Length: 198
Image (spheres, rainbow, N blue to C red):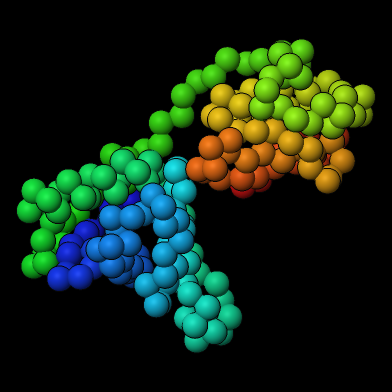
């Protein structure tokens, strides 16, 4: 996806090339790591480590007959924002014209993590759902347990704490450091197996 960026005296303007323009105050832009939800008065931007989500604000939603419109951009948000800041400081992004950037240049790098055994998972300090795992091992068919083990291993490797979820044989995860996304490894039954929801 192409994103065009320019500045004004007080703002950094992002044009997402699909009729979705977002204006961010320079103070908000410089503090983006601590301010994860930004409203420009017409749209909302939610920043995660691995994606930016742009949503029509409630006022716009009501004008559009209640239809919620959003764009999800998968990328390394910190790398993207730091690059934009660098280009602004170097004078390459200015008030008079848009500078075009490609989100492929900021693709989120997923590192491979070692697959843990269930014994290693149970002993891991970031795994707090022992009873749920015991329950899953008793009730979930063997072919789905390998996927569960791989998902838990990968999420622990990404710094996620794995906790019990209220749903049967399901797990909740959240970032240990508080930065990033929360979600669940949800059991959908023997036919569908597990899926990750964020």
